Each structure stands twice: as structure tokens, then as C-alpha cells.
Image (cartoon, rainbow, N blue to C red; front, side, top):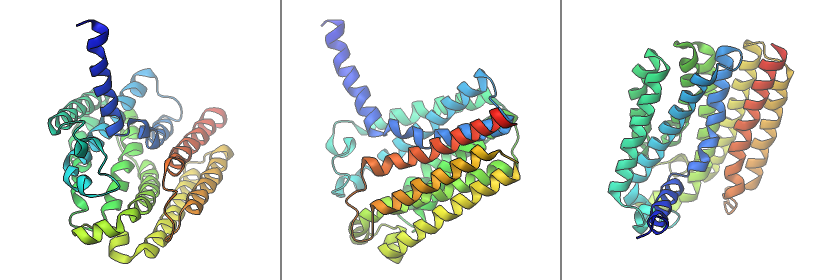
Length: 294
């Protein structure tokens, strides 16, 4: 067999892995991690911490997504919305996803070790939280809030990666991320209201109704924005940061305009991209504010 012929199945398998964990969506949380990194050092920290913070973030997200797909494979198989995912369809095996979890965990711990002692000490806690999240829909309606906090680890972890300690400022940024991510997840899982109700699974919409879930999501976005503005005031950030808050607010309003309790047909690619726009906008505002005006 030629090397080209041998590489084709390998490439296909790699692409399946990347698609299964939605690798491209790493961009959602990574800019908030970079915001925490920039704020921690009041500037760019240098190539070494930047590299290992990036590796840690990619490793952690890959671990979380792979664990989610592995743990929820039977739920995904029964849900019409997710039945075509790789594990239910058999295009990837359970052992494949378990191996990906193991590799991602090693990469994450290695990156934490390269950063500093506190990062390494807290890495197993973060990894455990990421693995716990998929189980939460089985016993609590607050599952989306667990996801929010799983993503909220990013800015505080990046701050620790730079400084070797934790402060209240990144915790406030983490609160903003937690509310922002939980809001999106609540809307996303409102699609599964019927399936969750029939199969004894839990979500905000299943517990309180779809309309209440939408109201909750709007409140969480308002709280997220309030936290972001408060952070800018607290840290004395310049006006570009607050401009980014206004732009992020516009993206959030647009997100809510795309869907309603009676029409969730537009929970698609454009809806997902809004998360990337929000996080990138906030990172750019933070970076410009710190580098150009501090």
C-alpha cells in the first residue's frame, strides 16, 4: 500500500475526531482565556505562557467535548437531533473517544505543569468538572449552569497561568463567561424539550417551560454584560473595552432575535457563530485597551 493510500483513512479518521468534538468551536472560549491572560499581565505575557495557556485550553476543551460525546452516546442515539453524531452512527468507536479523552487529559496536565505549580494543582479539579458536566442532565435542571462554569474556568485559569495566583478580577470575568455560556446552552437545549420530558432528562426548559427558559437566558445575558462592565470599571480599562461591551451586547440582542419559544428553527451555524463574535469582540477590546492605553 502506498503512503498516500495509507494516509487517506488516517486523515478521514482525524477529520471525524475533529468534527465529533466540534474542534472549530474552541474559538468560543479561547478569546476569554486570552482576555484573562492579557489582564493578568497588563499586556502580552510572552510566547512561553501564551503557548502553554493555548495548549491547556485546547486540551481541556477536547477532554470536555470527548467526554460529553462518550458519556452521552446512548442519549444522543435516541435523540433525533443528535442521532447522526459519530458514536451513534458507528463512524467512531467508543474506544476511539475514550482514547481521545486520555490523550487530551495528558496534554492538559502537561500544559498545566509547564505553566506553574498552582495551575498543575488545580488542573485535576478542572478536568473532573469537565467530565462531571455530561452527567448533570440526568439529575438536575441546572445542567446548563454547570456548562457555564465549565467554560468559565478559562479566564481564571489563564490568569493563574500568568501570575501563579488567583485574584477577584478574573473571578468576575469568569462570572460573566458563566452567565453568557449558560444563556446560550439554555436556548440550545430548549430544542430538546420533548425528548428530555419523555426520557426523564433535565434542563431549565424541561423544569420551568420553554418561555421561562428564554426569559432566564435573557436575564443571564444582562448579568454577563453587567459583570463585564463592572470589570472594566474595576480595572480602570480604557474606552475600547467599553465599546467592545456595547458591540457584544448588540450580538447578544441579535442572538435572541433569531429564536423564540415558538420558533427554534434558526438554532444553526449563524446562531453558533454569535458566541465566537462575542468572545472575540471582548478580547479585541481588552487587548487594545491594555496595549494602547495602559
